[in-house]
Amino acid sequence: MKGQLTKRDITLIEHCRKHLPITSDMAAILFYPNRYIAQRRLNTIHQLRQLKRTERIVVNQPYIYYLDKRDIRHLPFTKLLYDLRQNEYDISEYDFDGRTLTAIIHKDELSYKINSTIQNIEQVYKRLSLIA
Image (cartoon, rainbow, N blue to C red; front, side):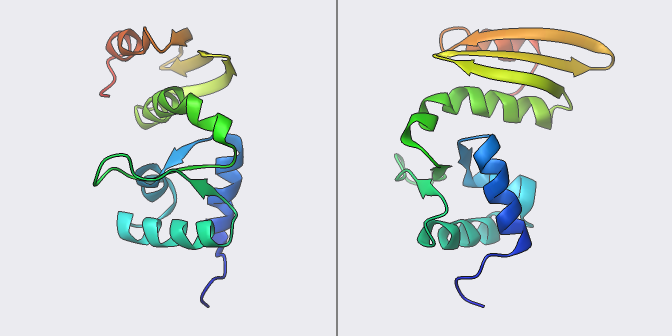
């Protein structure tokens, strides 16, 4: 049915309420079979005013979905958390404090505490051998 939310859509919205913002590429990996379906479903969610989105800054860049404009300032940190999950790190807790991300992560029975700012986010990627 056109304009109706599926169970996956509702799961995505709940995820977005906890971990904002999210890009359409991330939504495709986490919730939908491919990018085309993810973008189509995200457009439906946007039209029903469940989530807002930024405009594409550069052609072929994914939309960024958010609930509140203030969430966009966390984007580099949200992407870092996403990359950590993709590299099999468990994130036990995290907090955005102003322009700083504090997180406790675990992998292979080792624990790490991350204090990341915009200036040192690339160093965090290098230390943890993450691909940005």
